[in-house]
Length: 371
Image (cartoon, rainbow, N blue to C red; front, side, top):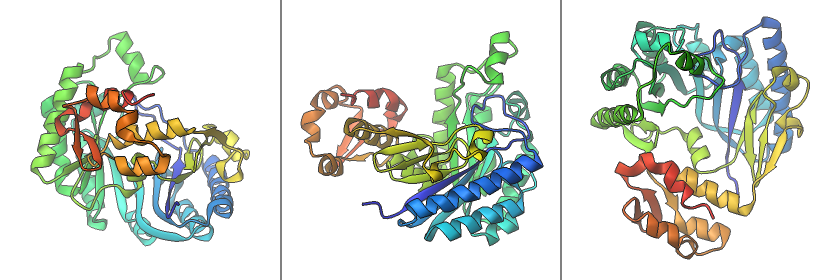
């Protein structure tokens, strides 16, 4: 039985798209923003009528650039949430970018208690190649501002960007550590239709090779560990008690509701996807109104997702809980996979996880559990 849900809210507006980004976003336009926020608040309220029986304990406002919506729009969103749902908020995160007019006081007054800053790097050369709008000094200033208002600040760092080295990656981490309780360190993954891919094909620059990126990751991991950050998911590190409660819902395959263009939701055996188009979204194709695209996940799909997502985390999966939920003997069903993965998996009672020094193999490990 679901006891709490998370809510994700997407604000799809960006002044300029980063060279590597394939997330849905559009340029800010005052009229479009106002119409979008009205549609978003309508969806939230209708979603509350459909799903408001379960309390909400985490909220995450991401983008895009949420600050571009403006303070009044953010206030409207929070009022809509308060009207629609029983809020029992443990964690309320808003994503922000360096150099924007970020309304920290307003966010704090609205109940936000966690800020995530998109730093990516503190090398100006790397930031220019990634087409980020900020430079290293503005990133550090932004972290300092956030740290003055909030105890729980997270920084995003990206690994594998053009011109990045092991030294510059670890330097970026050392630069953000004084201001944060949480660091997300993501390895770059490019789709075919982003500007960075075109630049690579034209020979404008190259990317670090795979071995170099692994070296970056291991060096970043070591620096964070030396400063008290524990890895709790393959790309996420935190002081104890500062793990992202909202993102843990995804990795534990718990229920969440997504509002806004391109947002996804998961309830029961169903996953929903809102249209990526702001125009279509404003026109009424929304999860909250029951008109989003729906995918039904069968039992085998659920089992695989539990294993795949859980093995990304340091806690791994609870074998006994999976057996109880789905009614099968785990060791018997996956005997072949468990044999093949001996030395890679670690078993501690009912907990099964990937050994610490093998966690980067998680994708290949998960595939072994596909029936």
